[in-house]
Amino acid sequence: MDGSFLPQFNVLLQLICVIIVAAYLLTQSRIFPEILDGNPTLKTRIILILFFGGLSVYGSISGIDFLGSIVNVRDLGPMVAGLLAGPWVGIGAGLIGAAYRLSMGGITMYSCSITAIFAGLFGGLIWIYYKKRFPGTTVAVAFAVLMEVFHMALTLMMVKPFDEAVAIVSRVYLPMVLANAAGMFVFAMMVKNIQKERKIQAERDALQGELKLKVNGMPCTDDTRKR
Image (cartoon, rainbow, N blue to C red; front, side):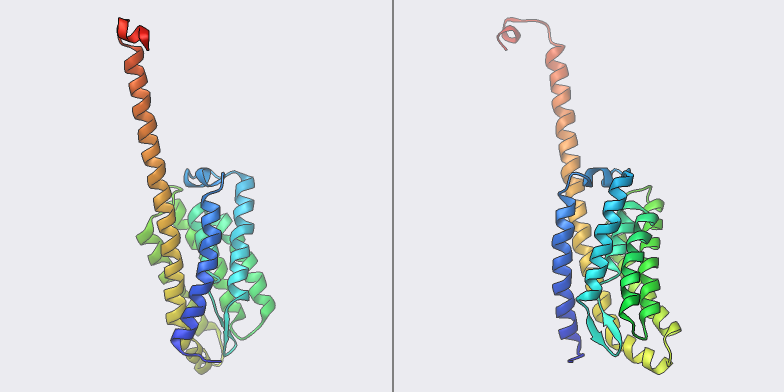
């Protein structure tokens, strides 16, 4: 296998495109408004766990095998799940991704599996800090970058022999950081656009309501009778 940077990054970008399409479909669903409002029901939380857990599994299945490590976007699903609906949803999605990663084996299976769970947990804690709201593009992308740095650090600490861990991290950290950050950026922009559309719609509805009140409160004249 060609382990150079560009082939790895190109494959990861292809994975990101599939994940983004799936995420876009979610943003157009009927359950997404309640997610943005910070009040997902139990049913919605279960749907999100399964949805983003499935995306995490897909990130592993379609990854690139390099020296026993899977270059992947596995962590993106749990990260987004946590940022959208809190720590329990993030952890649930992470557990699904982690379980599948463990089944694949390899010298990095423990560090990679643990990272998927922590990705959901940390994303959920950020959601709580921002009062049960998606934190915005800058914070989300910074979180994705730092999460992959954490992933690499955990790999260096847990994988033995250390020389092999260094060899893996030195080759995969850049494409994984960039791909996960790119995926998070696109998703965050989708959320931002939807939030902007909802704000515009709310302002339009409020304006129409004020106009109706003014019309109803006008003295009864010939013009108003004709209306």
